[in-house]
Image (cartoon, rainbow, N blue to C red; front, side, top):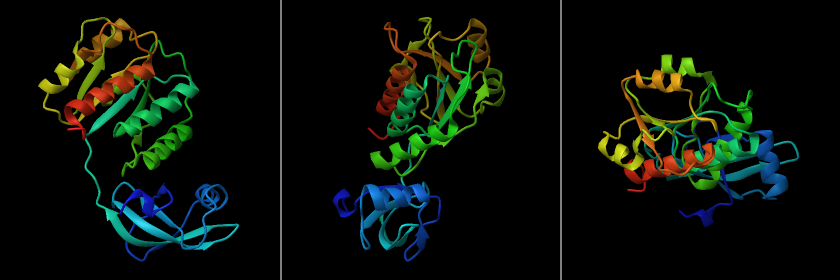
Length: 245
């Protein structure tokens, strides 16, 4: 089965199995009916992050709803590298970009963390989730990142899982080269911690160092914007441990 065998991909929350009928959400129905202008018997690929990818056919299409019938599984569920992106919130357009690219690059979770020098005071969580879903649909990914509730820095330190390594991007120049750090680690469940434009406060770096399962890393001598640093770091992770291998 290839991409040409269906018109689009959609993420749904329902379980998927042969013969199941489901009604799309209103925004998805509008997209199918008014944007793509599909008709009955048109084919759509569905995924829910657990059951793989399934070919479905439009069973009923009206002005109020679109009903699909699941036909057959076309891809088994994938196992992706377990990397979380932990980041200081940034401005709206750039956080849209960050969510999209992090999803495309395989991030398993997105966790906004408010640091001392974070310049943004609010974050639209529904928009963050929507961008992640759309990026998963368009990239061919079979999972959608978990979007964790925003927290302050102290909560991050308190709740960080002790069985999950944390790679902290350190702009002070004291971090190890990022690829070397990834390759010398056990490449187990991990997280990437990206600071705000103003960098981490010294006391925040001191708190991170006390975790025990943390490694400060560097992306080189150039000064990168937060969203650029996140994309570069995730690309390095994929090169060392992800599905590019």
